[in-house]
Length: 203
Image (cartoon, rainbow, N blue to C red):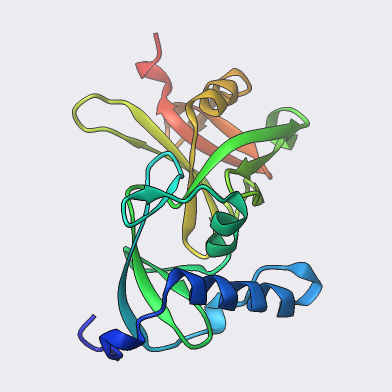
C-alpha cells in the first residue's frame, strides 16, 4: 500500500458517509444495476473497522450490522484488489477485513441435466450469479482435515462461499467426468465441468 495516497485521519469516511455515497451511486447507476466501482480510483483513506465474517455477516466495531438494507448497500461498493478488500465511492476508499469470501451462496436453482445443466446461485445479499465460463465454481480442500470449501465467482474477483446445505444439494446433481486422464466427481453448468473431488476418493 506504500504507493497509495493516504488522506489525513480526520478525513476518514464514516459508515454514514459511505452509505450515503453508495445510495447516491446506486441511484445514478443505469437501469438499476450495480455502481461502476471498477471505474473508480479514489485516494486511500485508511482502514475502517468493518469485518465480513465467514458466515457472511457484517460487523462494525465488533457489533453485527443488523440492517439488511445497509449490508446490501455496502456490498454494492465492495472492491477487491489483490488479497485486500475495500469499500469504494468516487471520492473515498477504505480497507475492510474479510475472513473468507465476502458473500455466501445460500441457495441455487438448476435447470436442465448433464452437460446442458445451468445452475444459478443466490447470495446472502441478493446477488444472482450463473455458474459458467465467466463465473467458475472451485473447491478448496483443508490440508489437515480434507474438508471441502466450495466457492462461486460472483463479480470482479468477489466470490461467494457455497453454504453447506447448498453444497450437499449440488452433490445430488453432480456426476463423474474425466479430466486430464483422471476421473472427477463434479458439476456441470453453462457448458463447463467444475471438478469437486477425485472419483477415487469417494466411498
